[in-house]
Image 1 (tube, helix red, strand yellow):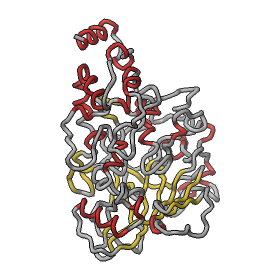
Image 2 (tube, rainbow, N blue to C red):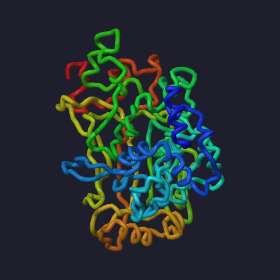
Image 3 (cartoon, rainbow, N blue to C red):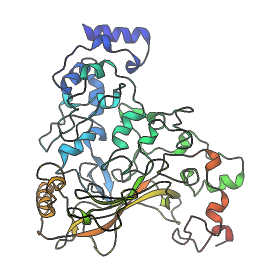
Image 4 (cartoon, rainbow, N blue to C red):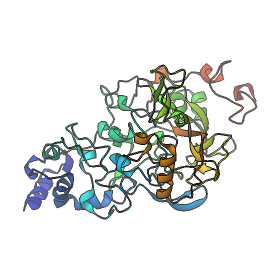
Length: 448
């Protein structure tokens, strides 16, 4: 009966469902968050089914990675932050759009495990538990949150995307908590006192499938978004500037810096972790040390790295052989000067040192979380053994640390047009572009 009354009210008012007051349709108390979801399913079963088809639920999709069609995503990727999710599900599931994904027994067909509240909470009080497989904190008032659901805002998305990889501003260069309420200098689109774009303004969503492509998990660039969704291909009054748009991405000029307000992590050296004494040179600000994490380097107002990008990426995969003497590219843009589909694009490059098997010459999927994880034991040998058993990779019992680098595309933190790069920023004597690295003989303005 409640469902029929609710649907009748929606039709009579002709307003979006999540723009409505839900307080009359929610009755608690709820013993756990899945009971909230069951209440949501009385009217929104189709929406739950749609969500369960998306990578926010599956953490994988079929795509071509490094020339091979396979199921790939966050579920089986490797990175140079916390490395892998495989044996760390109880912790990593804090950012899963569901409840209770602790191990491979999780039932991906159970609609009651969909977490509606993480995206639709409007109270700002909903928080997931990083030690409990994605269930919310015990102190969360589930009934109060459920009665106050609404359309997602930036804070809903930032609660995961700004804090992924181990904390605020660790992973992405252009997404951190400063985007919750930014001013114009941080991002001209999301300026809280101006345009106030929410994430879905650009990340258009259909049937709960959110557009956008992360280089680390979407190697094929499927469903990527672009500036041209709103802006003309020739957006400038000056033809000379418009000529740039054929080979230069809008972001290159309009995102001159990242990590504008909050220090951004640029390097994570795991090789120093587990020691009783911090290495020399730790200032506690730019460079930080934790025995459980190792040495991390942070910067603000960082100048991007520039590379050709055709929308697709190459990736290091779990089990790939490496050369420990040179940095392994964990994720990197594809394209070059001869690729007519590629443009010069800005990136954050995150570097690090991470554990690898010195006999088999591949990276170790180390186990970090829990009583037996490295964060607790500071025991690399034990962490490696457990993690590799979960991944199903042979482990020699011998380990070392190898250098890595990982590219992250920059699309947010767009500066006001008056702060965009000027001609001499690229074409001056001390210009920021490395023309030879990009495939030119020299500055193309000089005819090279």
